[in-house]
Length: 74
Image (cartoon, rainbow, N blue to C red; front, top):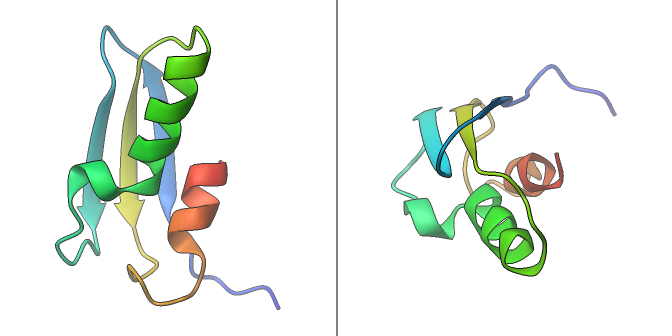
C-alpha cells in the first residue's frame, strides 16, 4: 500500500566517497549504514567513481519499514 513516508537521497560527483545523513538517525554508525556497505562492496568489485551521498532520513531506522533496504537499492 503506497504511503507518503520516504527518505530523500541525492548523489553528486566527488573526489572521494562521502555519506552525509540528516533527519531520523537514532545512532546508527556511519559504516553500518546500508548505503555505505553497498558502495563499499561494489566499489571493491567494479570501477565505480566516488560520489557524495546526501540522505535525509524520514523513515525511522530499524522500524521494519524497509527504509534502509530501499535506500541501498536506490
